[in-house]
Image (cartoon, rainbow, N blue to C red; front, side, top):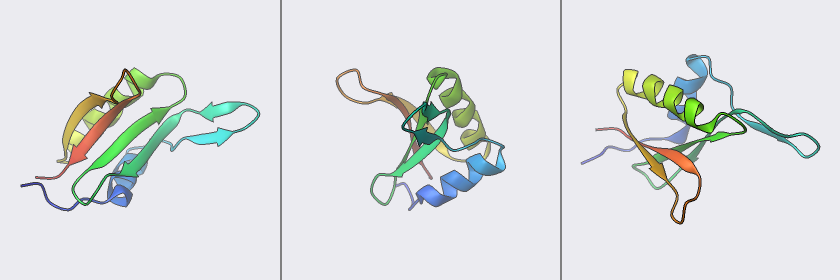
Length: 89
């Protein structure tokens, strides 16, 4: 059974790995980077905002797996955004 995981811990791993969080400017749009979102007590989602979504998610997946997390690539229902499901076993 997966253990409790926190979005702030995933954010810390990605930041320590040298990745930048995304930021939105209403005039210019998204500054590329990652965004983490808590999904209950046992899962965190990671998104890539801005251009380079596939490459960004691949890099985040490698970093998080190297840190010992279980990572499953996914896409939101109905052809929505790609994301990573992160759990800790």
